[in-house]
Length: 234
Image 1 (spheres, rainbow, N blue to C red):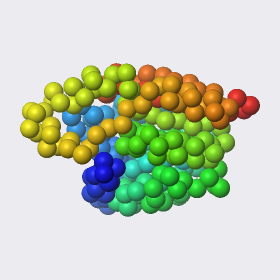
Image 2: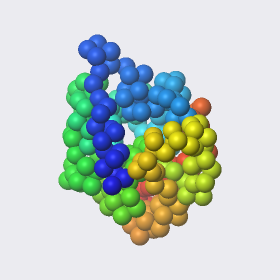
Image 3: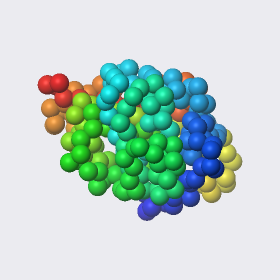
Image 4: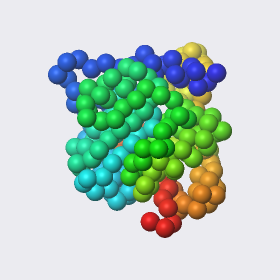
């Protein structure tokens, strides 16, 4: 039920006024525009640059984003690199915005667990998405992502199981108890142990680089981490 509740929230977002496509508008549509989760465009660009460097990204490569939303992360990457991009999201409004921002991208309205693995990309990423997925569903999505990627997979902004208590307290502290229960009822986050990713990487013969949250000025950083998986033979 939690996943369906989140789906209703994200299906309400989408749509950019004609001529107003820019990174600020896409960040807002992707939900990083209020409260502790607010990220400014300048900080978003630094974040995208950091992840691109960690992946070893270069001009002429391709990047696919699972749960791409309006495409803010891909848009920031394309400000720095010449890239072929694509993505999927279950929100039709968000995908419409991504297509408006990047009309030559391959964007599709779809659930993450039907990711097409027959059309490979160099990098397959998911930013601030796994927090909405149950563990079994996340394992299925991760498997498809690793099979689609030619070079590496990046799972970003993952809630850390070790800091779950502190993270939930932070979410509660910005609201009254009544407002918190009203806003977040049925909208829980999924928290992951870092070893959950290490174990799945080992099962697939992949390297696993786990790192702390790295978005400048982003309050949830201290409760989040990222993961890069890549073949040991590439």
